[in-house]
Length: 415
Image (cartoon, rainbow, N blue to C red):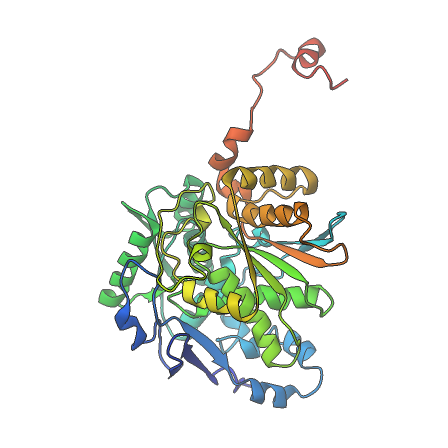
């Protein structure tokens, strides 16, 4: 039987509050987006709103378990789970780690098909495109979103066009090409690639996956919150550390828990901690000012290196409305967190993910976490995606002669 509730969602502008039908493809609020320029975050980002009262009436009792049985279809912007790729996206492992600081849980999204959190958004965008007979999807990316879209499109027999800044890590570019994506290196920043992708969308009608441009990307990313609630025994964590660049992942985390609140499944929001690299902290630095001022970003965590955070306005509203917290970490803290995480858990995460872990370590050192708290760190990508970043920490030994004496000289404390 066809689900009648999936079509009962609307788009709502986060700035003016105007609502729009979901009958056709929409990106930004037509009214507010007229104010946009390249020097500040866009106005008119749209939020997807469902018919929450109707969903509650439909399920009545045990609403979460019944939603879960349907894999949350009633609060996703697609008509059928069969529209999703056959690859397993989401349902990633969560590991409980013994620590004296708190009850620590690591949510490892490097286990997604293309080894990053971005597969959640790509899967929903691709499924929506499939249901609307759209075959070509375009995006701008520093690497992860592009490799994700290329991989998901390969599984869905769709065409992916990826615009990347020329400095994007080779491992991610390799993924895009291996998945058959059409790669377009752009001289300039991620923002330059973003603007060019929007121009191509406007002129040629390609379906655009860009985060904070296509509202469905947040719907894909919110699924991590639904999973966390389920994996933690239908309880919410006390704190969640999230790496932040454009602000779309953290907005997705908020949106997932907000949907659960609107369905009366939970009655409060976890404390969500936004973690940014110190030299790429344009969201945190502009949280309490009237006029947004951008600064050039430089960090080893390329996935969260953003000059103009596209989802700044939604992120700011979420953090202020739900009393979220924020912290910046230095690149050396990110590298240290990468080493600590790898050597103590066997999880090798990319620098952006390790930024979230660095934020957690900082909170522990500062006594900002209570020992009885349940704390989640989102690990959003695999370390193999950016081997260059960790090279300064590594010293690969020269080859030795094949005898024990040579080994003892190399590692005198081994025996």
